[in-house]
Length: 322
Image (cartoon, rainbow, N blue to C red; front, side, top):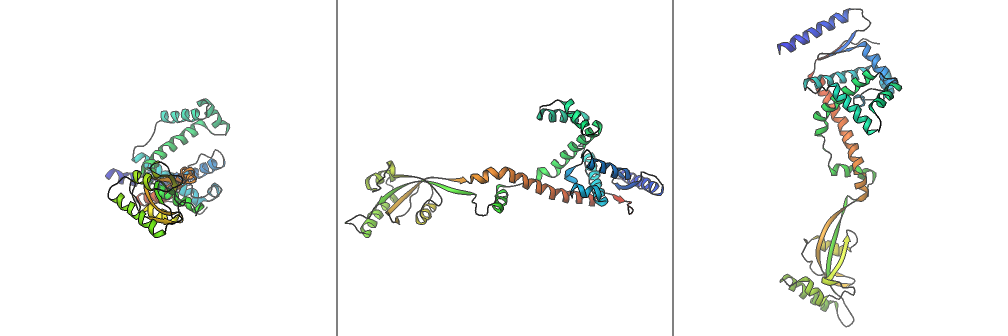
């Protein structure tokens, strides 16, 4: 603690000396043990207008505004120093060997050589050593943000679907698919609905007593398209009549419904299988939506995290009206 106090005292003293001195490159701010010089503003402007080697995650506004707004520039530089302080505190610094490895991986992704990457850097008017420093900072900060923020972001499928519904308000996340069999009792000429219902009810009672559905279907079903075991087919939500769907939704796989009346007659259904079918349009868009939500959450959490670090840090600004 004594060492920290001495460090802060030394920095404050240094700040006071530079504030009184009439130097071209003066200290504008101190962030913990990091300093922000007047020349840092010009360097930042050069990066914005030239090489573009700035950390996009730290830009709260568009780059045109950042290039003109000194307060936005100061905030950007303070945020940089806060990140760099945390990198040092958490021992997340990387070596130049790691930077070289990043360049090699970049070259491999683009099917070119490392020398060609550096040649492209030079062609854009960038100094190679500056570019290497930029990569070093980016890797270190990415490691920091991964540890402190990104790894803690959670986007559920429900979150993604809620976002999907904003663009497609009538969409459904999933529909149920049912595989069913039936025993059909038809009201034919010479019969009455009451007598047919009574016969259906008797078969239902036999099922409840444990007799096999498949056997009773073969003996009693009057389905003109009868299949072995009474198999009717596979249907999705909305493809049944409401009465049939409501009855099937009440039972588990392997169970039978009570007698259901439709225009075709009286039915007893057996649920053979069921599963959820996801909306294929949502499944196609889900990765992009999830990425957008992660980015949005990251920006929000980064802003909160930076503010908390400002609150915890020693921050001294010696800014005069420009």
